[in-house]
Length: 145
Image (tube, rainbow, N blue to C red):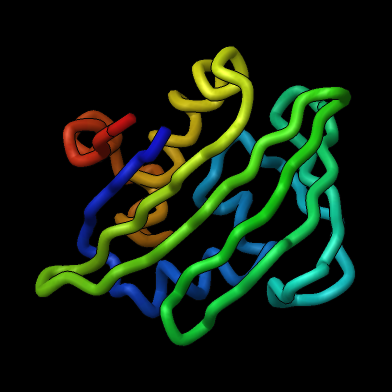
């Protein structure tokens, strides 16, 4: 499954929010905390994300391409494993981001809605979080198979 969102935030700002795990809870409402050693994602980085309900998932960053603004990580929660491919692209009036997710169909279905919401918030920029634009942004997030 691939999700795509477009918004006014500059690609550099969107990439900065991806690259800094401490920033993830500011735009991804399903994440309340990130436990990791390091301030910026790097290949091999391991850590944990804590969800809204206190559930902790472990992760490892597989690859990071700063020049192309792309990264891949694996996330595990019990027996469920997801592989997430992120990319950020500049646009004339902001940026676009894509998220390709690999994993069991039931896990993809459960993760799609919060991921759409988070991507919309990300491309609006952190300053827009809580601005009441969530309904409009939902129309700017697309899903493809």
